[in-house]
Each structure stands twice: as C-alpha cells, then as structure tokens.
Image 1 (cartoon, helix red, strand yellow):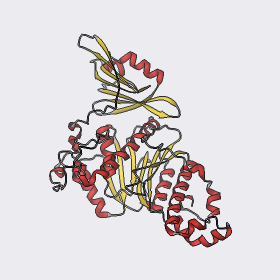
Image 2 (tube, rainbow, N blue to C red; image 1 turned 90 degrees about the vertical axis):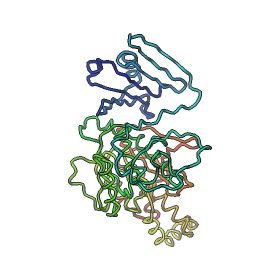
Image 3 (cartoon, rainbow, N blue to C red; image 1 turned 45 degrees about the horizontal axis):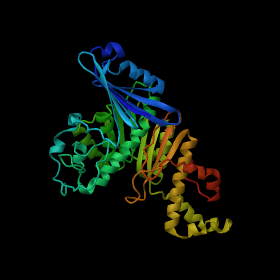
Length: 426
C-alpha cells in the first residue's frame, strides 16, 4: 500500500505547469472509512495549500510529475521505498529498496526555528540534571525532535539550549508530542472542511494554564506545517496569562494571544470567525462541559478534550445513594458504598455522557488514552470530529485506542435511573 509521497526539487516551469511556484508537495494516506483518500499539502515559499486525491488521481499525478515537474519524488509503501530522480540532462532514474525496519526522517532544520529564537532563550535559567543518560532508549519518531533546539521549550524548562531534554521534564516532552499527534490526526479533516474559507485556521484553548501545549500547537502549525493560524488561550490566572503573552511577544508568535477569563462566561463577540478546533485540557469539573457546549454552539470542526476533576455527578450520586440503592434492590450499593470507587465510577460515567452529547451533536467521537496510566489516572481524551470530515488514528503496539464507549449507555435511561442531571445536558 502506498503510504506517502514527497515531491521536491521543482523544475523551472513549475508555475506554468501547476499554477503556483511550489517548492514541495507532501501527500499522505488518510486512514478513514472512506477508503483510499490521500491528503495533499502544496508548499510555496510562504504558504501552504490543501486538497485530497483519490488513489487513481494520485497514481496519475505521480506518472505526470515524478522526474519531470519535480526532479525528486519519494514514494513510501508499507514494504518498500521508491525514489524517482532526474539529472540536469533530463535522464530519469528509478530506484527501489525494500524496507526491513522502521526508518525515521531527519529532524527539522534549525533554520525552521529562526523566528522563534529571541533574547528569552539567552536569558533562560541554568537547567540542572540536563545530561540525561539515554543509552538504553530507542530513538523515538517524535514530531518535535530531541536535538533540535526549540526556544519556547528551552524557556519553559523542558529543553536545554543545545536541544537535550531535561531529565525531570521528559514525561512532559512526550506528552507534548503525543498531543501534537492528535492535532495532526484531525488536521486533514479540519482543513478539508475549510477548503472554501479564505481566513486562517482558528483555535481556542480553554484552561491553557502555563501553555506548554498552546505554544507547541502554534509551533507545530506555523513552523513545521507552515499553516497560518490564530490561537487564543484562556485561563483564570492573570499572572500566568500575562507571562504567556510576554513569551508570545518575545518569540514573535504571530496570531497567538492569551486572555484572562472564565470558560462559562467566555464571549468572543470581537472575533470575526468561529473556532475550527477547540482544545480543553484538564479544565476542572463543569468547566469542561461549558467548553464542549461552546464548541458545539460554534460548530467547531474538531474538539480535543482531556477532562479533569469530575465532581458534579459524584456529588449527585452521594446525595442520592440511599434512594438509588433502595429503589434498585441494592444493584448500585457496592459502587455507592465506597467513596473512592464511587468517585471513579462517576468520572467514567461523566465522560461517557459527554461523549454521547458530542455524538448527538453531529460528531464522530473516540474515547482514547492521552498518556500512559502510570503517569496520571486523568488520562482520557475525547476526540470529536464533525462527521462531514475524515481523520486518521495513531495506535500503540498494545491496544486499539479507538473506543466508542457511548455504545454502553442510553443517556435518558441512565440519568433518570441514577437521578442525576449532568451539566452537559442542561
């Protein structure tokens, strides 16, 4: 199966042939229910354009442009790599090699990071324990690579000035990369839905906190993917927001701003466009519900939510536990009896009902593991994509991360049965 294609080294008549002065074209497979659809990114010096190909269209495109319009074309299959090259005299050579092991691409060039370097990097505090022993670790194919200095990670204490990951921050580094994979998962669908819109990608990050992930998303989109975007981060802590705005200014992060505010009262009347992607990570208790309701009301194309501190349903179960147990012959007595078990049951129930709410609102929802359970029990991620689009999935060696947990519940029956009224349905 053809997994990806990269065209580079354009000919001098590229603009006449394809309409723009493209420098590179990247094509990758979309693993979706629609079958063999490919997501295409066209790169000029300053812009990125998107479209999709069917399998037949991609085959024709390769035949037409490999070795002619572009002097270099690399096709990656699941079992081989095919390279088409053309020399100055126009002679075309086709090379093929079998793939016997996973091969990783080269790190991003440090020149891609130039606009992110500033005095903030130079004034970063000295980082202790920065020489992490890594002899027993295999090289990981992270989106942000170790060894490539990224100024916002240096300033936030995750990375040393020479690009090494600080020992105590390695879990944070992996978490950042994991989340960028989820952004990359939904991006083809979001950009496909935006194909008739001429304004930048709009993102709202509710409960952004210190904004490790907000800066990472901006860096990923603008520096790595070269996609123009506008991102707003919202949090209650004014001192944290002021700090994030200073960093954004130091790093010259165009289109990235932070505001102080409550998610439940957030108003974006000054914004011209609705958010395309809504992010809510560890927004406490019903703050997650307000963020999800906002995303649905604005017809967001994708939603990524990691809930936290689901107290609301737990409080209602606690208040009604005697009546629930008596009316249903003790069915829930073992769960409601012990506070720790009741709390965990309430958290899972809350997230199940949230997933159900998003499905009823026109989204394809996956309930996934955000990071390894050994690091934190609050690791469920709800990924919701408008059903008009497609998406791919990142999987691990041990498990299928796609789980439609809402098949297990019917919300009117479960809420009435347990005498609860979650905020998400009010």
